[in-house]
Image (cartoon, rainbow, N blue to C red; front, side, top):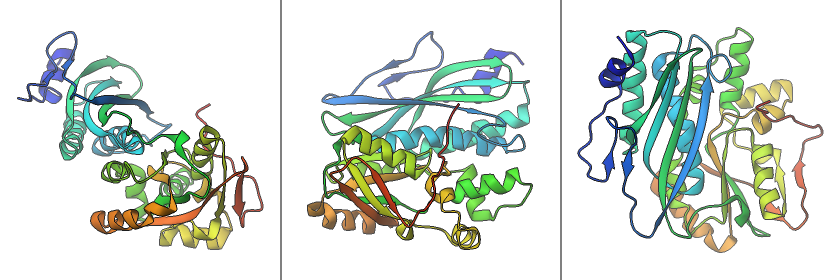
Length: 308
C-alpha cells in the first residue's frame, strides 16, 4: 500500500456539502458563512510525549482531535473542518483502521469535515489543524475578564494528570481517570452557550494555575481562588488527602475543561446553561484589581506543564 492508497482507503470521507471541496485536489476549498470569522487552532501529539506507546489507535485519534476541539470550545466557536498530518513508522492496516474509525466517529459527533492533510514516514506523531466559525465580534477572549467576575471551571480537574502519573510509575489508573486521559471530551457545547454570558474563557490544557494566569495577564487583572473549591473526582480527592499534593489538580494539565469568568448579573443565565447541558460547573474564585493570582490554602509553588 502506498501513500495514495492509504489516504483513499482510510481518510477519503466523501461529503456532499457544497460548501467544501476536500481530498482529491492540491488544496481544499471552503465557503465561509456571511458575518462570521474563522477560528483556527493546531496541535501535535507525539508518541511517548503526549501518549504512551501502548495507547490504542482509537484513543490516539480521539485525543488528537479532541484537544484541538477544546481550543475552539474556549473561544465559543462552532467546529467546521479539520486537516490531518500523520507521520507513521510503517503502514499497519489494523492500526489505521482503528485510528480512522475513531477519528471519523468524533468528527461526525461535532459535524466536522476532514478536508485534507499529509502523510509521511517517521516516528509516530499526529498534527491536526481544526477550524470553526464565530459570529463577528462574539468570540470569547482571554482579555475580557472584569473585576468582580466570578471564576468557574467545568467538570473535575486532575484526573488525566493522576492517570499519567500512575502510568509513569507502572501503576494502573482507575477506569474513570484513564478515560479522561485517553479520551477527553471537549466542551464544545458549553463554549457556544457561553457566548454573551461569559466575559473571558480558556481551555485548561497546561494546568489551571498557568492557564488562569493567561486570562489574568491578558486582562491585566488578578484573581483569588481557594483550593478547597477546586472540583475533584473521588480518585483525585483520595490522592490529595493522602499526599497533600494540591499541585496535581492545580498544575497537572491535560484536563481539557473550560475555565471562564462570568459577571454577577449573568449568573442566572449560567444556571440555566448548567441545567440545559446537565454539566458540573464550579465557582472557584473571583477576579480582583491587583495583578496577582492568590491561591488560598496553597503553601508551595507549583510547576505547570512546559513544552520545553
